Length: 502
Image (cartoon, rainbow, N blue to C red):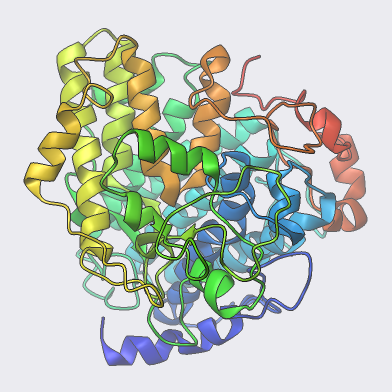
């Protein structure tokens, strides 16, 4: 990435970095760069990408990562979330950042690019909008969609049923693919923080999102993902196709998780004992990539997680590990979609279809891709304070790991469980997707999570998050006429999303 591009996005990260004095959100911003209705497309695009990456990797991953027991904070809001205690006000800033930031700016980008006759920007806007809506609907269910970000016609917006939202997302992705292929797109360059103007990769990203969405519908439309694969869509073929949002080792451009764990001074986060124990049992090569060794005290240099819901204080970093460098290094990227995820989805689809050979090939591709990705991001790095070095992952390491009885596809008695377990490990970068998998696999509920101490949901995993307090206050009539006003935590576990057939 060029120096010019660094300067171009610095103003955005000045807003994002550590503007978190509010007690209701860790990664919130005071103001989103929106309402940019007459700004050139090349200027509009970077804030859209950065804000989506920031919030998907920040707040939304914090909420869902706590549900899925990747994280288990020991005090404050990280503890609250580990205890499955979610309140209407918790997601105000996150909801606003996506609707008033990403989606509003993307609508402006689409409008401006239509005027300037630059269809590639139109397509990029549509693909990023589809990603944003998919994230939101899988967390909340019914959401504003058809009337959203059209303030000239709708001051407040109706809620669309999730089935309609999904149909709209698929159509949006199809249109986005058509538009990014409409001309040579030579006018798109470094302002495209994800692919630097490579439209072939945007098509692969969009098709991966489409495959993801169709696979989410496995309980509603069991053959949808398989039918899509049968059309031989252009999908991600390697880690070079991953949709990554860059962060930088600069005080104004840090990775959001790094900001929270290492710069904010809060010191109330921790990784989960559930996840640490899983990777320990598997002798997983990603162990030191995923978990930072304890920095101080008698346990310095070792790794340990907090039992979800436990309140042992670790403000001195003497008890529990934090998120590791490949996810929470100062310049670790945010992952919006990946080759590994693509291959895990194919493995699941092929396994359900009875094609064991194709499922095994995709499974092994997926695990290999995840290991290689993390090795490329942080292999050989050294943790500050402890001096613990992260060993690079070699081809021999990968072969040994895949051959383990506890990892091998062919050795698994329950091959779908084996696929989903490894996908769960790989989705540490996208906890919200792991939560989708957990809900839609029905009674199996992979992985095997523990009951958090002092949890607020009668020992059950929430099926959705409550709608934001801002929506209750400002759009309450449409909310009431649609999905209804949010309910107490205790009933969140009983209200499944449309695609989650209970």
